Image 1 (tube, rainbow, N blue to C red):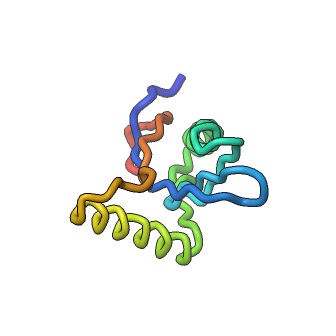
Image 2 (cartoon, rainbow, N blue to C red; image 1 turned 90 degrees about the vertical axis):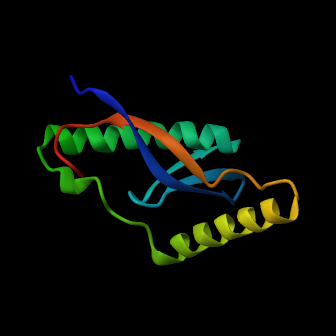
Length: 109
């Protein structure tokens, strides 16, 4: 059985049709839910499945598959907006980064 470790990925949350989508930018995986929290829980499950599968196949390169560049740009804009709001004393927008738990082997991915 794989050991569980914390893995930090950049997660962009947005509305897609009638539900929330949580997109892990470094893995191009998505989770969906009625709330952003539900979407990140679904994403966490997807990340665990993907990393477990890659590990079981001995193919760590299967884990890193970046999302389209537009999503990285959107993520950067959200971060810039957060910093700007902090600098001006305004309330910060929702967190754009999440810590995801998933299995990890001794092989860097």
